[in-house]
Length: 351
Image (tube, rainbow, N blue to C red):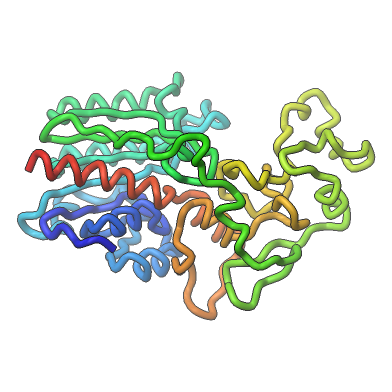
């Protein structure tokens, strides 16, 4: 951990298990609290970040309450990643989804508390959404409150994150224009599946490694075992014998889903981690060599969580579905560090 900046304090909205918060902690920032409606995130968030977890919907948080979380006299930094499902390309017509209002609550809290710095991370489709311009409204609210606003699409491998994830990062400052630091890695330097998980012990499908409570996988059916054995790293189900192909993929509507039931490639970044990374049929989540889907430990490493990060209490257990949500929904820790470092350099220059 770097030396803390005692006058800089962060509150993380929609904090989840703490990926963004941990990036700020690694860069030496004081994080006053994380706020999230999911109580199951409490242990992991507080255990790893020495910050308070508040189980509450951001819609129900008042500006006065938020201001009370910051130490007196601190430079207030407000960050967050509103749940992105309503903004994805798969749900563009679901404008009735209640999660649409969460970014509006974020904007309201900015207006009510006037933090010096604001950062928001989300899916790229948020900028392009044609049905409901929620992002444009968010930016307009920041401009109306006299922030300097910048945003860009970030390809995660450019910053040493070993997955092909693209994210929208917005930075806003009351002081002066604030921009994300330039990329740190060229394509020749990208972190890969091999450099990230090759050191982990080999396990079979359905096996739990005795030395790591997070390194375990779901069992495969006999048919799926045949399928993964027939899968090539980087290949598709189109490489299989006809008798192994899923019926829906034989139809015209299913022929474009080439990445499901796929294996990763050792020497490329992993695909984007979703909340269903633990299912071999849910994407290109097959291990490059072992006949199984990746484990929560491997997914956490692709999300750049340190191996010592505790997702559940000692001797505790958590369903794969819940672990999938915690890990897949997280902001990659390394991206959090890049955002925090960009803010730190900005504050050093202008304060």
